[in-house]
Length: 293
Image 1 (cartoon, rainbow, N blue to C red):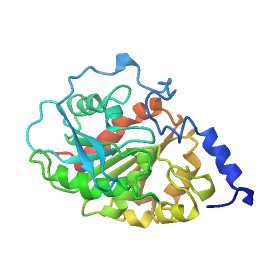
Image 2 (image 1 turned 180 degrees about the vertical axis):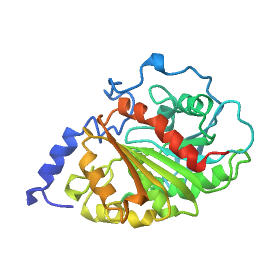
Image 3 (image 1 turned 90 degrees about the vertical axis):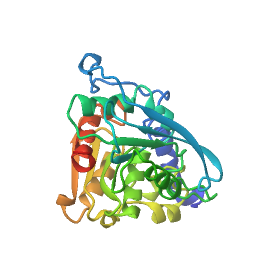
């Protein structure tokens, strides 16, 4: 780790403090984030009965024996096995938060399928802590938990179809799905959506909960590794007022061909209101690529 006197730790410290409501919470719930004017008005959200939700816990060896909550969300009135989309939460989030307001993934999936006509799929969530979905110096590895423990468990169920899966992540989870999709490859991942991804193009600015020093950043950053996603359709959404917008633009521009990535930039910041506004389009995009016809 760099010393205090190298002139860059101060910059990182200031940024981390300044993002206390952004990178520090990662679009979490109960951390001062509010719905903004960009979120759908309550009157515009069609009330739809959500489908069934399975909730359970397993002990994760990859996370050092931690009890790890997960859920499986299905759209209403759809029977039989469904394709799977894995959703990763942001820093400070959890599977419970994604199930509840203001996220309400069960309601969002129900509206997508029952109202918008999106081809149905199931959505799995899992609690991964604050470790940025990769191995940390003390050994906890939420990324390995997803790949080696959660996915085999889900794909063994009789209500989930076999791979390839879709992936959807927000903030820290947006970074996480880009990294994990690259590890899994196109034979196992059909499409990936990174929404307001927590990306850094300078290790001196990276959040210390994810990258304690430049060596950890170089090992796990997705910057300059867009080729890992070759063959996987990628969508990136981010607001133009989001602090992660400049690094995300750099990341998108780094694809060898713009045909390899679909990017959407619109007004909004790193806030749940922006997330709610773009989520219907993201679910429809995933339905086109992984949904059951």
